[in-house]
Length: 231
Image: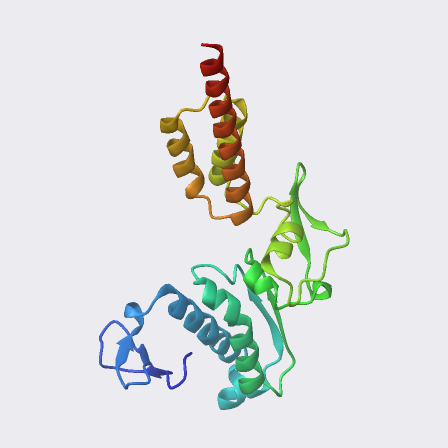
């Protein structure tokens, strides 16, 4: 939660007893919160509720004295990238604050490199789909803790170096092929391809394609000069 925010139990709204009090004092019912807020609150309250349900004999000491293993599936589900980046830090702080006397182990699954960059590779079990189903990948992987996202996507999520969207990759490949196959380039086609290249975000790819396009234009202009000379 942001500084000054607090989860409260409120009877102000009939459908929601859980609410968020903002730093300005505004009370927002549960259903008005974003998916990220709701999911984080659900996870935290679910951990506390299950500790109380499983150990009723501990009564008010259930949260302080219950050891256990917490399983969280797809931790990144419905979380904004900023939440994916920060959630592990929030969760560890919450566990250390509320259950510091307990022996609590957390096991979670994720498809997010933002989450994965918070864990050392030695603490990660990699799963990979094969023809025989999903199997544990025992091959050696690069270190993930504090690693940039491109390296994690390449290694841990088996993207190979293909971290670009498939549609975008096919679009760029088609533009490359069309430019390389051009034998003649008029002004209209030049500006049309220049517009296609201009929407590409990768500076290196955009500049290289721009150079190729300019080269084709110069070749065409050279052909025109040669034809004029012959005439």
